[in-house]
Image 1 (cartoon, helix red, strand yellow):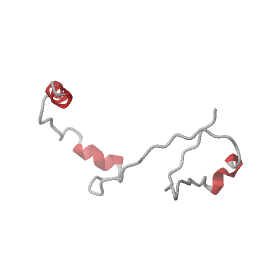
Image 2 (cartoon, rainbow, N blue to C red):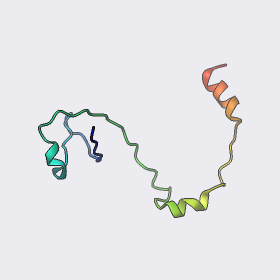
Image 3 (cartoon, one colour):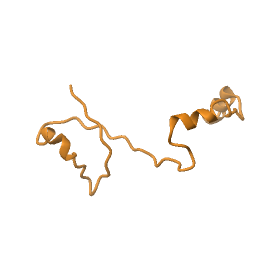
Image 4 (cartoon, rainbow, N blue to C red):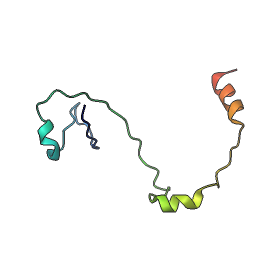
Length: 73
């Protein structure tokens, strides 16, 4: 199986395959849709800039307690 990846917006239920993949036109394909949330514009886009924030995030709740609370236990 071969795979390609591209990002696009659907219009009226139609997803257009980019022209650069024209050899895929009129072929039977398996489609998997992934919804991509809009990126938070406040977060840096560069991985090197993200490294500045490494280790600065702390948990406000014990992970196991959080899971219990979410499950309603």
